[in-house]
Image (cartoon, rainbow, N blue to C red; front, side, top):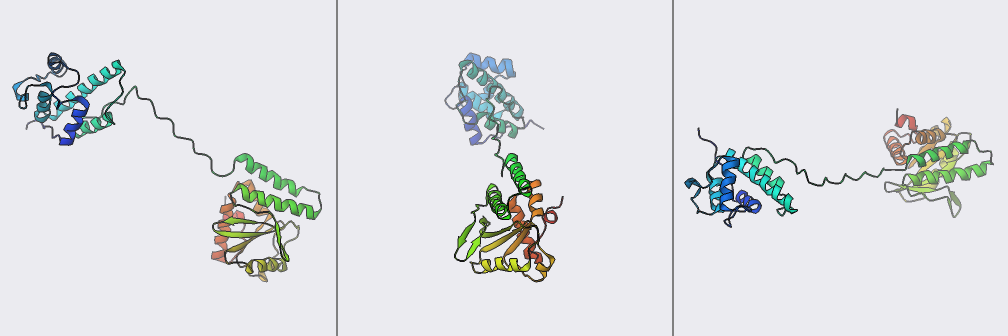
Length: 302
């Protein structure tokens, strides 16, 4: 069985011409004598043999004929040797590569002919390292400070009203560090709203109670009344430091409202949980189970 001949397409030949020259009659910077010597000495090929004169007598025409009739293995050896000669000359002259992606494109052609890719360019400037992605969410320092702020409120000796205001301010900052676009407390005609935030297309009103005793059903009904008087996209978060009484759940059906207690806040802060994710899981749990108060430790088991 004869050796496999190179099956070079018009595109392949054009690439070789762009890199080494051929159709203009020349090949790189070789003279006739040096061209013959290069093939004889480095490749043990007589490039001026009659079999390579089918297109004419110039260096380029002999090279073209060689590419058309020589076996793949010889074409691969020749292209690699010419590339090394060309690369060394360019380096000596301080020239930059003029053919876009020449090394990669020639490597692909060599593989097509049964050879291997060219070695990586030892003089290539390595690409810059990929940018370090910016950390998502607040920094550890911010989260630790938020946890300490909450713990400090627990130890406060101020009057209940002052501690309640501090609690509202803390909740606003907590929402803001997780990107929930919080608003501070505000008054409307006949009512006080302890704050609000945005979450996944809904506006949440906040009711914040720093009481040691659990919140009862009457207080929950009062907050739900505020929600039901507003557009359907309005929801509510009732935050009671002291939790919620068991009787309140028997006497109250929550609509568009979820709940959080002081223990929830502590575990969310201590475990560095994304507040938006806490809200998301509480909302889904209420939708699926009709339970507006689901503990953070149940929603995020360790």
